Image 1 (cartoon, helix red, strand yellow):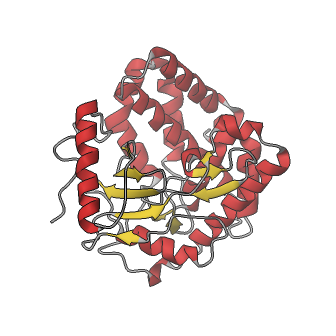
Image 2 (cartoon, one colour):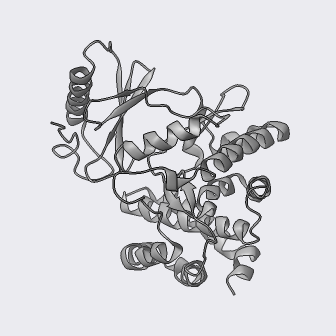
Length: 320
């Protein structure tokens, strides 16, 4: 029987655990792996628990085992999507080649590369950066082109929240904390949300669900895209959601991404909707920094960046 690895040790979804409990949890997960795969060798283990819906145990810097958190998405749908996508993807993606008999956790070989942070993107040549965007968007077009009606998840397809649902959560659960800490954001955020909550997609596609820099891997030396990872948030929703991450690299990068994607979807509101999703994502990140007790400098940096986004003429014009 599957033993939930976080129920006894994790006091919050963020998995803030002391060193001893961390070691105990690694041992516990490794015992589960060895029970399912007794011939698998392993001597070095790294526990990654920043994911909100899963834990990752990395074994010998070669293989990752993903353990969905209790109540979160299982592996079945992610595995199915990756298998379908793998037949047409030209970018390397995870492929589960080891899944425990009960289907409660699974493993794939690590994809080499480093996360494409904004700082790293800024060092790339124009040719290289354009190639990264082109290759990433090509993967998105293949993903969004999958016929979800021919894939049968266990239960209903998960759906990404709509802008209205995101706005409702922000107002109910997050804005009081955010405005108490950064009151100067009260008016611009409220103005933004009034418009954002009315954004509507004209079609529904299979989303990656969390396509940000941490999940775009590039070669540390050449800067070329080596893979795209973490499809654990796969769901149906607005294609603009999967384009929000490109805004972290600047307007030019986001515009290029949407232009390339436009070969598959030329909806004239796609660029603006993706930018709205990015702003909403930045509001969420600022709230999480405050809730997790980040230092004043970190909060000031995030709040200043968000204020600049909200004051940008493109935002003001779109939301008047």
